[in-house]
Length: 108
Image (cartoon, rainbow, N blue to C red; front, side):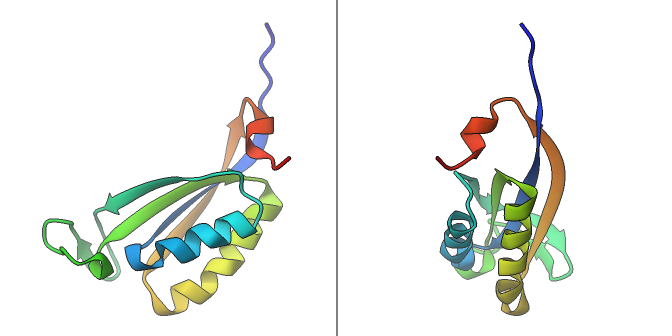
């Protein structure tokens, strides 16, 4: 059995939970087939420490969204995030990745 790998982009977004719906709408509108959400993400960044045990309000909690898309779709997502990041804290990572079942990452 021969296994083939197909190049894609993995987009990882950490954003305030209050912006989660905006981000998932953006991901959908940019052609992603799906995404994975980690609803509570703790960490330290330029705006200090974010810990669920300290910040009980949604406004102070972060979420992480991961999606795998084409390079073109990744650029659309990053461009769309700029408006959100002007007002709210967040970060985005885009990395090269490879998938085995490419058809699972393409809209039909």
